[in-house]
Length: 575
Image 1: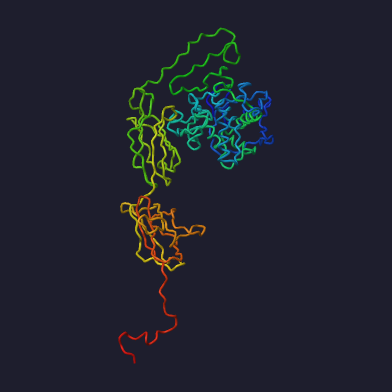
Image 2 (image 1 turned 90 degrees about the horizontal axis):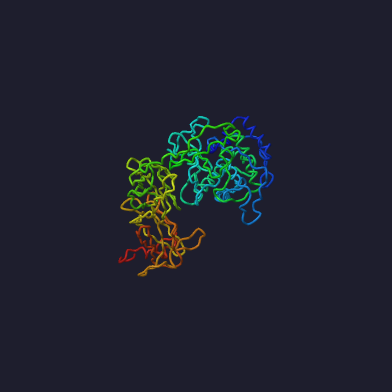
């Protein structure tokens, strides 16, 4: 779905007659229509529309129907640096092209079997938003103002009630497609990606949107080098033969070649007055301003004018901007304390953010997105990595309970004003290992073995923390010397590793859910004596266990009875 970019739009899921008209237009234009060839030259469209297998990303509403030029663009890759030459129609803005190629590389690593070509992303981006309004993005790849599709209220388009509380599309009643790849918020919630590594998933960022579109197109077991799978992927975006034909025509065109042009200089489809500097988004920007559209040229037929006199028009006026008291100026920490938790536990502290308006006062109903960043398995309650909430009447909002995973270390939680280019608030969080402050044996059996044998009894211990069971606590076991400063012993009892080799230190040990731990079998070498086994827990609890290796005393030969002399009571005469 695209924003209403003017008269050269087609509503998705149209009638068969419309689809036939577009295919006819493809043929008339010299484009290859619905029977297209990829770079390999062997992929033809299936020619039939498979049934939809996904919910459309776009809500099946307007998109550009303009077709590629008749001329063949320069073949890409003919030089090290793509020339900044040729028509703007065949060129792709630098940041947009970079985002498509980066997404292709990411999918090649994550889902190589999908074989996603960047030209498919370029074709969809052209049809959905005119390559992000001709490349009107900032240095980070974010559009200067949100690209919004029409309201999905069931009047001419799908009926999709609000799913994001207006966080992305500014509409808390119905959804609207958002961004250069036109994702509806509910689809973005599932498929959104962080393509530029800034810790955010922003549908108005071309790197994020292109990577999300790539994952969406690769859903399931699709292989996009196969015509049927490619058709199915495109139709999952917008289930319309006309849409498929239009995307296919641009896909073929970009496969024949293209070139890079500067950001902001890309051509927009006809129907926008021909000005490449015009904003095709019909909805007001967050600032409340709106670029006026030019009056129709009366000298041009079909533009609503005539050759006769025209009625004077009033000069365009600019609506007033949003009052400072209603404008989100910044977000800040609202008193959150240190974020620490033990592995597997909950963070006692809750992250709290305050939104401020342009006058410095608290701002209610401001949308704030909390995102967990870094190499961690920590998550918000419910397993979520990203949560979007609105501030209350006091301007504050508290994130859900943060739960630590089993991975220890540091990570970051970032709070940002949803869809706004404002500095984020970052919070450092730390997950520490599970701990025990005491460890003891579960029995008091003597541990002995003969030289060259194994200890018959198993060593079992129990760890506790503040008198409670300490589950999942790391334990190290080491055979130590009997010196003032013990070191690992090189003789006496030992363990065996997975390869059967002798080891006298084990570190990959953890207590179970009941806080107990059974050590692996302990073996004795040929050295007799008394030895020490030291156990140390995460948290500093220590236990030293004594191990004896000795030869058993000789016993009488089995099957014989003791002699009378040996059985006499000492001190009594025989006889």
